[in-house]
Length: 403
Image 1 (cartoon, one colour):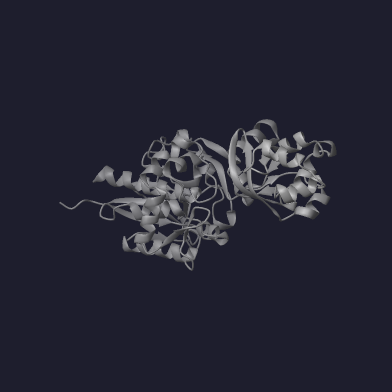
Image 2: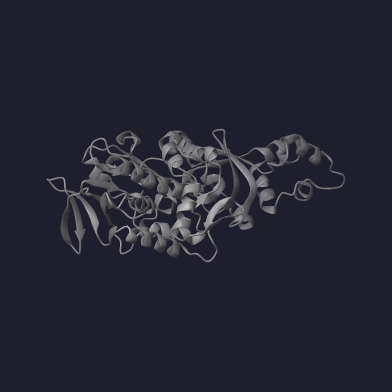
């Protein structure tokens, strides 16, 4: 007896949506993706402009700890790991390699559009329909989806509806959070959006910026709320940005929300203990402290300038205090960059509103995946991996519910 296929409407065409469509069994489901833009996955393509980091090669036991909250995404990540993603990409014709940063990239010469085209070819082979310039506008009184196309309303009735509408950053690529009211009207709890993986404001003086603007602090570690992240940051007119501080977004936001300011601590020489630093500072011979910092401790001119900007003259000439500051230099963060300048956002649909398979508790047979849910992750491949993993996980669950 032939199985009657169930219809699946996927709203949005980012990584979570595409992976879901690729995972669903075409013998069990008729899948249609509705995308409001002229082309799919625009944020996916823009994210590749600075180096197309698909995932990270980190061991899975450490990988799952990168998410906030960890428990929400752990099952999905373990169900479709970073290794699984690389294997799947290889199957569809995208070879990857591990960079020196342990991040995973497509082989050199493979552009973001090439990766997307291979994914779209896979969907075409599975008879997935992709309808662009089709914008979801809500539900009618029959609980059918209202889709606007060429200024005409189309009503879509699907057995299963999956929303993958993204968060609220990089609105030029599509996600703008405009869907919030539609869910609020259905009684779904929404957490206000906040920027994540973004720049943070520090009030630098003009003299310091003239020396350091656009320059990096490399091989450092940053601590906030006893959580440490290593890497580098760039000094900007606004403050700082870069991988080391992006990874502390949850902690910094928590302090800003509570106190209106946040404090981070920079270890300018994480490879040396405070005692070794004191010893080097004490063996002055005929060197100035600045010379020792540059020659013996190998601090960069930017690091030295930052040190001098933060510590007083009295602290700078006190070996004990200076050594402590090198290992734990406090910086005050005053605010967070605007949401539209952020790489990602937190907020959106409360995690309490979905079950273990991302089904909305108040809307049976309606699911939500990707960045529109209230979770957080640092850059470095973790954001994309989570979206791919959520799509794959939901696809497997829906497959098994019918098979």
